[in-house]
Each structure stands twice: as C-alpha cells, then as structure tokens.
Length: 198
Image 1 (cartoon, rainbow, N blue to C red):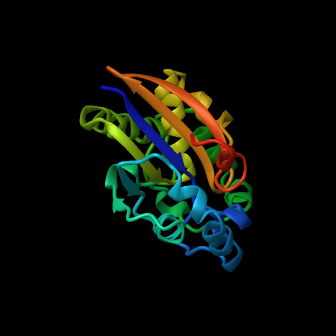
Image 2 (image 1 turned 90 degrees about the vertical axis):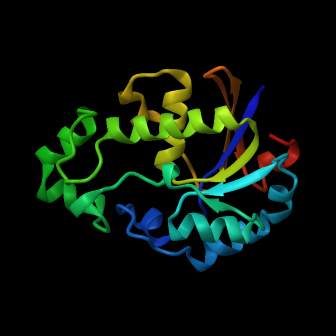
C-alpha cells in the first residue's frame, strides 16, 4: 500500500524571524494571517488524517489551516538543550567551537539536547510508523523535521540536513511503499501548492 505524507512547515513566529532556536513561541500576527489565507489550499489537500508537531507554532498553524490535527510526539522538533530560545548569532559568538562541532558532527550535542543523529533516527522511526499504517497524511511539522524527513527519505548522509531550506508554509510530499520514499517539493501552501494538489 502506498503512503503519502504531506509535510507542511509552520507559518512565521518570532524564533524564525529572529533566527533563534525555538522556545515554544506562538505565531506572529502576520504568520497567523498567512496561515489563515492558505486555509482553502489546505482543505484541498487529499488527506485522510492530520498530524502536528507538538510545538505552539505548529499547532497554531494547523488550527489556522482548518486541520483537525492530532499531536505526533515523534514529529517534535530537535531538543536544543541550553540553546533553546537563544539567537544563533549570539551562540556562535559565545561558543564558536561548540557550534562548529554541532554543524559538523551528527553525534555532537554541545547544547545538551538531542544530536542530529538522534533526530534523524527518531524521524525515520516516525516515518516508518506512518508507512506501516498507510494512507494519506498531512502533517504540520517543524522545519528540522521536514529536513530530517527529506534526508531519511533520500538515504542521504546526515550532513545533507544542513543543505535543505524549508520556508514557512512549504509543502514537501513523501510518497512510497516498503520503506522506499520519493520526495516532491510542492511549493508554498496557498501559492504554488494551490495550483495543483500535492
């Protein structure tokens, strides 16, 4: 049976705008407006069920899109430990060696949170669970979960994680069976994605 997972990244919040490690921020008023404006496009997604990362910005995005999404703990964003809520620029200035290690070694977690390898493993397990259940799923998930999903689906090396850009309200579609995924970037929900169902 083919499984189709439509990953939607959250609309803007203050952490995305300020390039900070997220700390549970809600959507900005502009982000909320953009998500509500994409509601018709979200309603057109061919999904049997909806899921969301547990964060406030993902839950609020799902709600603004009109999705009755169930929290998916396996799709939580990476745990950033003591860097949570800090600006990347500040962390780079204060701990350049730690940031370099985090960016270059998938098994490094100088912040005391989750390593990239752990995030990739958790997301791979989450995708495997979705594939076992089958069906068509729309999931509003953290940008790092989208990146990890693409890396896992392609069987790419962990370093590829840092090469995947995920803008707000981007739709990335994974489809496949028997543990083999195909990846398609469908564009931004409400814009490119609205011109053809992903």
